[in-house]
Amino acid sequence: MSKFITPDQAKNWNRLVIAALQEYADRHRRARFEEAIAAMAADPSIRAETKRISKEFKKTERDGL
Image (cartoon, rainbow, N blue to C red; front, top):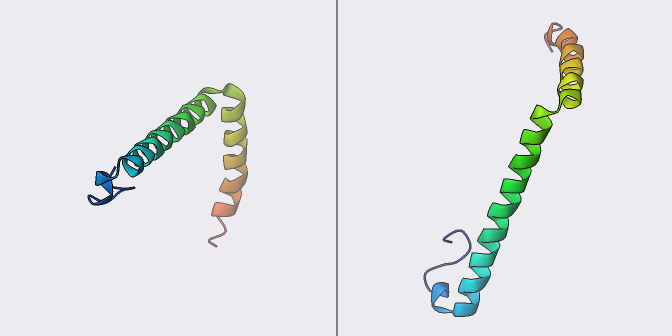
């Protein structure tokens, strides 16, 4: 919780609860994002699309810019 609250603010229960909820929401949001990325990485159609895009960009990598 140090990211959201100072030791002095921890004495205030309202701020402590708010900080704890913010931290929980942040962890939950991060976990959902990671789950979505993992699902995308396992999706064959997305993998095929990223492979196609990567192949297109490979052509431009050779131009030295």
